[in-house]
Image 1 (cartoon, one colour):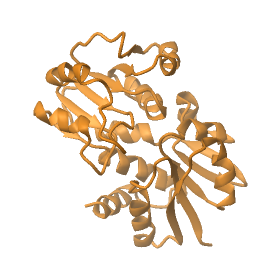
Image 2: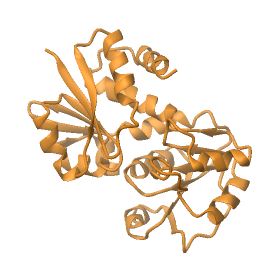
Image 3: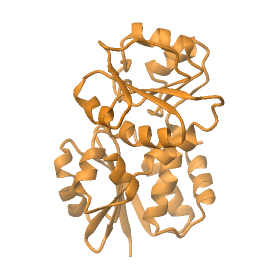
Image 4: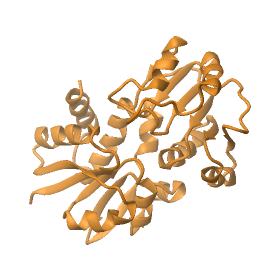
Length: 263
């Protein structure tokens, strides 16, 4: 039976997910296809999923918390972090998973001697990655434009600040987890905050992929080792594909197909 999968987001036109998933479906002989759905209103996620007769979906910004709400069943990690980026339908019910965080953890393993990490932004991706990074032994701080989104992080014991309350200090890794730089050429925080941070850092990561964001351009002025979101994209996609195909395929083989698909 032919199956349909999609990625929900807004904006979503930049997404490479259809390319990498469709490449894996074709090469592994899976009767399925994967496409993009630009969804403005996250409250319509569940309705749209079933209207499109999907077997599964990935969720990108800004709908990861909406996907959490839409799930009938949550795996333990998704439950813990309050954000879902992978949905699979079983017997007419939605099962929600989070493959972002394990994907991100794998993607930063290449940077050596990283202990302290400053995350810019407090959205769904930060919700999941902050927990898994702390569990892995990293010292995590979160900087966000507004106070409201930081409340849940404070409750979990994270060090948090807004642009107004932030006092710069040395962090080994600076990570942009906002969508700043995705559509327009903006920075995730004021330049007077970012410059001293990048000057003292050992590496910088932006989870946006497919373009060199203003944040990464700034980091390169300080000769920092940098990476965009491509590594995380592949790592989380391999795990999502594993859920989509009910654990039938060798993950290293899937990873290699997806890597080749985006060169």
